[in-house]
Each structure stands twice: as structure tokens, then as C-alpha cells.
Image (cartoon, rainbow, N blue to C red; front, top):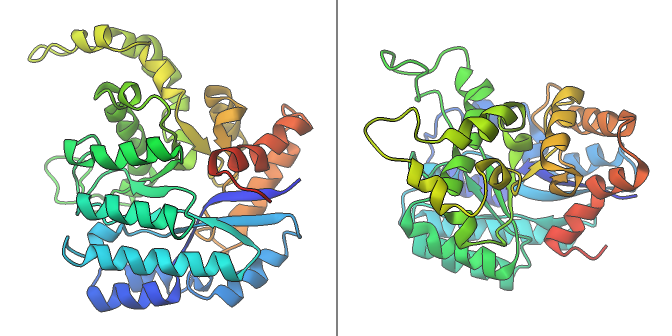
Length: 338
């Protein structure tokens, strides 16, 4: 069977140059990529990929930071165009790269719709990438409805990557987060909060065929099955200044069933327990193989190897289910013909 890595990250060289040109002082970018050469060096990346055999393939996405954090709304559309042109070029030139996820200038909603159409219709993007917030604003704001409508109409996925920085404090009396808590626990929270916002704002009823792939297997949600189940069945019982009970009456189903409509990927850094928990929550038809390459301690192959190990050693998966996770779901959602 093929192993289609559906969520891993690159910074194509021309895009990386343009990003630094637009915002040469962007904090932590140099530190982040200095020792992760396979983010920007595609020859080295391809050599790294070879160790996983002929059946391993990648669907590429541009690494964080989000474009809207790099450039303002005037410059972000051009930056997104460069990113998507570069990604399409990589896919056309290398058989190992079987598709790409288009990047969006989310701080310019009209331009984001235009670029999504171009990337999908002209460049062959398999869907688009959003982050869990747009410079601190939620994804359920009205100005993004046209973008959701576009992906719904095209029947292609939205990949959602967590976004939260050290400037977001863990406690209200501090100026920022300490000990990288913003990443370790903040990113799973961001993902779960985004899911709840799309549910309770009515997006999943408004766009019933919307396919949203949550990075890192749904963040906190699978582990908190009880909270999003019987806990959220009591929505409004804890709030005195606003009546949330009417939301439950408006929804067509229980909150937990909406959470199960999301998709997740296996990028949980080689954790068997997290993988099992996510698969039990979403079901194998809603989980895609992904590694989060190259952000492991080895700067490239580590999370690929460990994720494959977990899936191959999982005695609770039969071969048909394993194939569904490795390749079947990706082919179906992205309409890949390999």
C-alpha cells in the first residue's frame, strides 16, 4: 500500500526568500529553520524521503507562521501566490510530492477567495490551509463565509493548523506564555476551540458536506469525549449572562456528533495512546496518515518513522483499515489518482 503523508511542511526556497523580503525582522523564523534544512532544501528532503521506500509520498503544506502574520493585507495576496506557485512547481517536478495544500492570505478575505479559486482550478491544489485563528480572530467570522462556501462547493478539504504564540499568556496577569506552554498545551486547545466555534456558529449545518482536517488528531477533543458529549449536552447550564440553551435547540444533532464530523491526522509524534484515542473517537474513515515532518528532534525523518511504526504495530487495526488510513482516505478526500 502507499503511505500518503497528508500533513507535513515545507518552505519552498522562492517563497522563503519572499517571506524574508516582505518581513526581514520576523521573530524566530531564522531560529526555527536554521537547523531544519529539509524545510527549504528540497534535494536534501528528497534524499531523506528515500529511506522510507518507494511507497512513501507527501502532500505538501507551507510551514507556519501563517501568511497573515508575515504580511499585511496589501502584501499577503502576492505572498500567497508565490507560495502556491512554488508548491505547484514542486509537485510537477517530483513524483514523491503527490499534491499540495494551498496557502491563503486570510487577512484579506476577498483575495483569499480569489487565490483559492486560482490554486484549485489552475494549479491543482488538493484543498486549502487555514490556521485556527486569523491574527487572533476566529474562523467563524462572517467575512470568511465565502471561502468556506467555495471549499464546500468544490468538495475539497480545509486543513486547519493550530496557531498560538508565546505572546498569548497562560495567566491573565502575565505578558506572555512561559516554558513553551503556548505550544505544548496551547495548540491542542486552539484546535479544539476552533472546532467548537465552527459547530456552535452553525457552520457544519450551513455547509453540511464541509471537510475539515484537524492537525494533530483533533487536538484535545478525542480525549475529552465525555466533556464534548454529556458535558456539552448541558450547554448553557454554566452561563448566567447569555442563553446558550437555544443553540442546542437549533442544532440538528448532539454536539459530540458534530465533533465526530471533523477529520484528524496521525501527527501525534509517535504516541500509540493518542493514535488509538483519536481513531476510536473519529473512526478510521476520518483519520489520515500524517507525520508533521520535519519538526522532530532529528529534523526530518523521526516523526515519519515513529508514526509508521505505531500504525504498523497497532494490533487493533486490520490490513484493510490500515490501508484506509495510509492511502484510502487521502485519495478519496483529495481525489488523488495514483
